[in-house]
Length: 297
Image 1 (tube, rainbow, N blue to C red):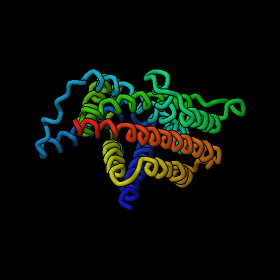
Image 2: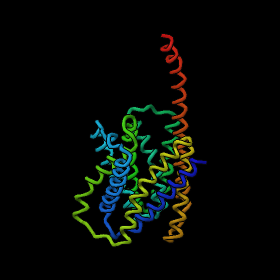
Image 3: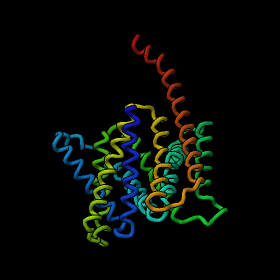
Image 4: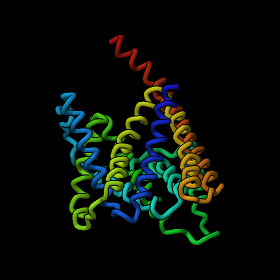
């Protein structure tokens, strides 16, 4: 029940962020929006650390990996924000569900992970889901869809880096350096094409900055109360929810191919998670005898 409540906060945060990005599309450049978003996040995290006395947690010996992660994460955000201004909201969210598929592909091709039946099935279903959404051969592929797919690939690289950082860095540390590094990267290009926001645009910028933090916080909190497979399933509700938002607010068409493709990618992600859980259980069983042996010694 608690997991569902926290995931409701996640879904609401992502939907509000998408609406805010759409409202700013064409008024402010994407890089300026990202720069202000990072500045708001940096300010909020700094205030939290200042009041809680957690400044020492910011010490890191992995600054290069933080930099590598955030270059790709910023690229992913840039493509996602740009796609929201060019495509129906549901299509952007549907294509975003391909992130775990690209992450799995990166793990197999570059990190030397073994190809299993679960991974192969997940990859085939995930790619099929992308093809159902993009529909190559049936229509001219929208370049904006390729931009969102490229952003999903950037997110996959960032997620792989986050997995590595998670072994030694706290979530607050990762979020702090995310805001700091991305603000530093975006600042100069944002200033070179700066447009003074009006009051309504500042409100939307504040919504983006706050929902970016609340989405991460709610997602992490939900994971403390439920298995990851349940979280992935609940997160899929973002797709029909944002589709309804697009229909109600922006008069977008509700295409069944988006829901069908998203469902295929959801199934792919669940198969991948099931295979991962099976491997972890197998490892735990093989590790128990050795642990007992060490106790005897």
